[in-house]
Length: 168
Image (cartoon, rainbow, N blue to C red; front, top):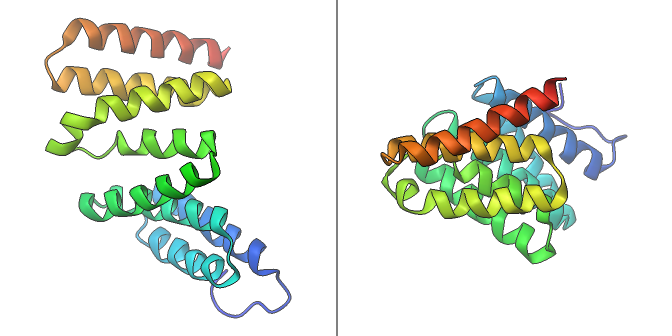
């Protein structure tokens, strides 16, 4: 629907729509999400929209994570993180750090906790309770993989309590 020429649509709006559709498709584990976000990336790079570029890189990273292309996911997420850091966009940084928590490989087991804890701190600072909950759950899952069962219980209990609070 969004592919192809759309002369009456502002490039910024078209790029954002492509990236948003790419993110939705990545949640649905559709491979088209990457292509849509890549098209959005092309548009934002053409018009010099660095914030749009950060978001498109983030969505591309999420899309390939769903396909277990971990190296490519790390590449896109790293580019996104650098851009968000350039703008001091704390919410963008927190989301990318949380996404790094999904990269399930040996490098992640070594560095994932620090990234998730940093993302958690940013989500707490920003008052983003859904982001806090997401990081708590991922920290708990990581602690289980590392054999730290008491720590895992603490993270997961806090995440579950927050989930219940958000649901009511």
